[in-house]
Length: 385
Ligand SMILES: Nc1ncnc2c1ncn2[C@@H]1O[C@H](COP(=O)(O)OP(=O)(O)OP(=O)(O)O)[C@@H](O)[C@H]1O
Image (cartoon, rainbow, N blue to C red; front, side, top):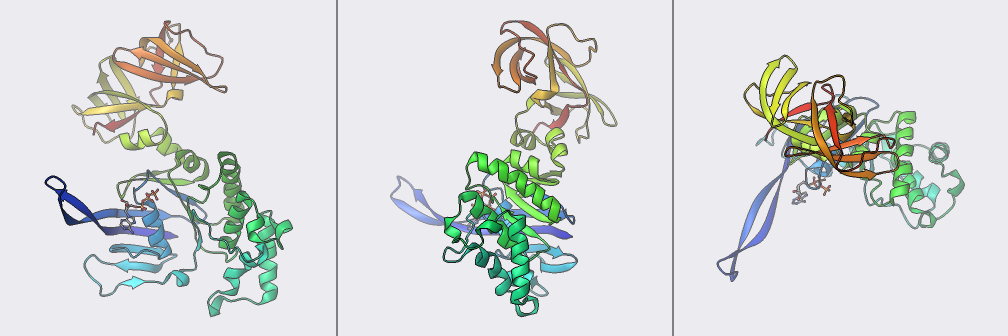
């Protein structure tokens, strides 16, 4: 449906650099590779998320799709129609469809609702100012706006001034305004970030329900991994202008391909070692505490240094030695913390401090010798760098 291919965007930034003892300055012009060779495909009906830390290039990618930013090169096509296309260094043959001709729905962090208009008029606005070919009569405007307001549970507020809504209602209004034009693609840039934690969580599920019910193909930008995992059908984790990993939330969480992805998506235990044997996807990794066996889709060769990573909830802890002796280490509990629905133990094994998360019924006194076991199917392997 949406195809983004080899997208690049650089920005020039200038700053002042002090020379010597800070007396003289020169103007520096530095190039920032905001988006550096990014490619991905979004399928029909998908909620596709661009996830990454601040400055990784997710907003620039989204703005390029919207037409608010002109990339240096690459292509963006929607349903086979080129929205943007330009070969590096060539202006000839370039395509760049104007923002209002792309017909996309957008909701940004600072949702600009019209304060002087009623809720109804806010939602009707994009229909009333649509390009001539797509403009509809007032009766159709009324029908569509009423339907969208009902879907967003805002029908009761139709005549109210937009500013007289709560934060969550204003956010829903911004969404209503974006979807009323029935866009083929909805672009959402951190739309929940101005809301408090509780409202954010409830709107997150509402957004997911809506997205599924209406089947709107959407691209969502966030730096919040929980939000990304909860909402998305596909996630592209971005790092320094590039896609570090693309996959389903489960793949990204359970099978991170790099240390960056494993660290960014929640807490992980990293066990460093050397790959001693490999047969297809089965690996044996020698660590300071013994050999770990695991099955992973990893690109690491025998003899190379690697990191096995595992989530705290995939490590089992017991006072008795487990019957399956594979991947069992013995250590001592150093800390435990009760988290309500879960229990965390930190287990010291040689130089490693292993984070273990279990059900709240397991509670082991600090100082107790224990066994921990790493499930071979839950360990993933990433290169050392
Ligand atoms: N107009 C601009 N001029 C110069 N540099 C820019 C401009 N816009 C973005 N950048 C730089 O490009 C890089 C990517 O920025 P971008 O806003 O896409 O990141 P982001 O991942 O969306 O970050 P955030 O979550 O903080 O919004 C950053 O280094 C940023 O400083």
